[in-house]
Image 1: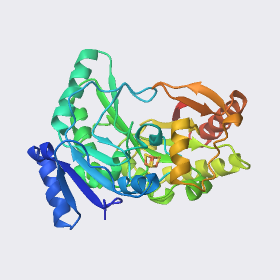
Image 2: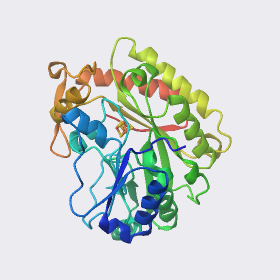
Image 3: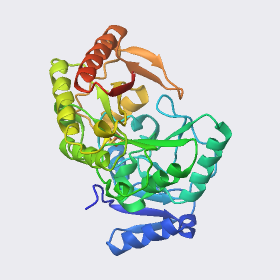
Length: 345
Ligand code: SF4
């Protein structure tokens, strides 16, 4: 059973010219999901107010063709975003997608996968002999729809064969079966986004549990993929060290069960650490969709930082961040001496 079952599917007429567009249309029609074909603009979500429309959009899958335009860059995790999916059906209150996609949070899948991958190969060739890394999850959780599209598996197999290319994506979802048999040649890194249990219980809905994420992580590690953990967003609250210490211990316990994955094969295990931050734009969406949220979003307690895409973010102050970095560096190095902490922001 897929983790996400859409309540309605919107298919652009152009997408029907592609095998994946046809296949998705047939699949959803067969299962009785309402499928609507549209010509120009994506139809707006029904609902009496913003919250209803937002929640309806989160259950809407849009099948479309991506216009040819330049890929976005993707610091600090890669050189370029790989645009195969955008959006996510999850309901994590703190979600970073609220800043850019909060007014249209439906899940888009692009059916011209071969064209997008060919364009990616062009970027790789232009940078040779320098390596080029693509991020598959910059504006989405692509595994939420992988059981329908198989797009991450196709991209993984593709980049395995392109000299100088590598691929990575991050997910909270667990529909990874289609990736297990792909000839990835160790060139795709799959990271799992995790958090301590109290934060998951309070702020995450509609996404698989931590236990399921860890089982999926170990399954892909057993299939020889390099894996990583993205601990995000890190919140500083009473007892945060104990809560995150427990999380790191759970990750270590799970990772010790891998039979031939990262630890045993010498593949690097990576960590990315992202502290909680919010934009005014995201806060405006969050308070409308989750009116009783307890997310800490008091601007007066934060430092304002100018972001890569023109949005200013409210982040923890420098002293708090030093404490966060020191704690995670010490604990992760002790639990995973072979791990590589890529960044802590
Ligand atoms: Fe956002 Fe990730 Fe949660 Fe999806 S799983 S709602 S992308 S934070």
